[in-house]
Image (tube, rainbow, N blue to C red):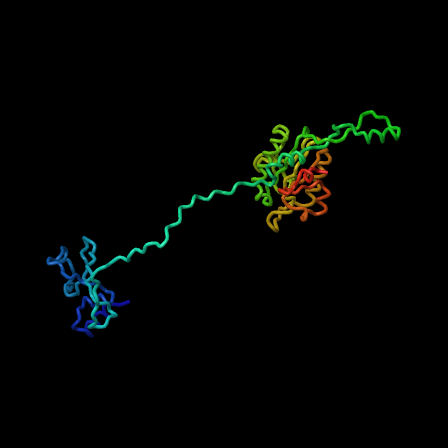
Length: 311
């Protein structure tokens, strides 16, 4: 930081230089205007003695108005040696525009999202859903073989035995998993629920949502309306649409456990409700204990009606 002592020493060392210029170079004042005002501004009589002897830029500015910034006089930079001739620009020309050698590409249309492809092929979706939701009931033709065997053993025929036929009159309950492992299949779940209601009937279809495991709570609406799970009426087919604890984020502490699925299978069996699991993961990931709880069907386009029919 420079002080007035530095200014005095510099003026004594270079007596032929302008004190105002030296003060500007030391950062104590700005360059003086090229044409100083002819008249002394108001308030000059109130300045302290000796104020007029200081360089112009060291004097106090008038208090009634802010100090105006003087115009900077053009001159060579301080780093340019004396006697160097600087070239001044004569004119300015903008850079020439370069024409394109090829025509521009046509404007592309905005990208549209790819159409949704459900996991069940649209042509076979109705047959697959009917195979999943139907329950076999003895209402088909008379089972001649079974009738002959009873007569041969000397047993009375109180009722004619009939072959089992699939029926949808008992209705179906969809248990749809909304956990993290099934988030990539949210649109497929909505499409499945719509198709099941179209095949089985809206009045005969119950849709219940849950996360991770149904026994933690389920309901037809948002998560804050879920209540303890209650099985449907006896005979109702229950389709569990879930990853069954096989997917989701790794090391998720809330992932469903084996004991929860075993308790669900036991509860449905006590209420005489046939259950089937529908999962997007292949048989290579199904543990043995899960295969023994209820039939499993892979939710994929490669599945057929024969594979979808629970055994």
